[in-house]
Length: 231
Image (cartoon, rainbow, N blue to C red; front, side):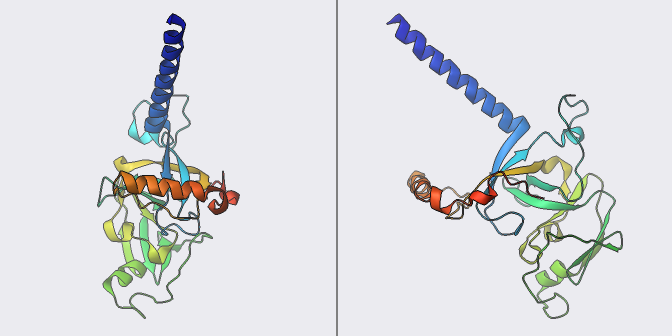
């Protein structure tokens, strides 16, 4: 009986240590995140599951970060995860295109930085209409004809790679530095089937969704994207 209690205690202690370790890494080092929308296509697809580096921007959030952690400031081109300025309980993922002091300008969909055109190979435009020219919806005009706008101190201008279908800093403004949670590091799994939208609809719905995901795990996983590093 004593040996059985000892073994049970060892298992419980191991589970406790594992739980504490996972809690620590999820809070301070790495966090998982999944893509529920198309705003970052083609870089990130609906159903991509990501590992987010939470400590990389530690220099900006701590006056004395641990010396063993390789930290740096946010850079243009980083794919960042942050709390939504509109709905702080929601996490978003976008690409940072503007740092404090940068002047951002969109002219006929094209991005200009400090009055110079920005060349990139990750942006897509899927709406041929150009706001202010062939489309006069106020949202389309703001989407395609924006600025000039100077990014304020302590903020970042973040937009989606799928420029025509992204709700981003063009609409709700720059991202305060304190809302930035980390940088996308790697896609650890990509699922091409039904993806949760993050809304809680009860235990039964959650169990049913998990069962459908398990049934399609082999056939609907995008295995070629496993451990892919998005740029």
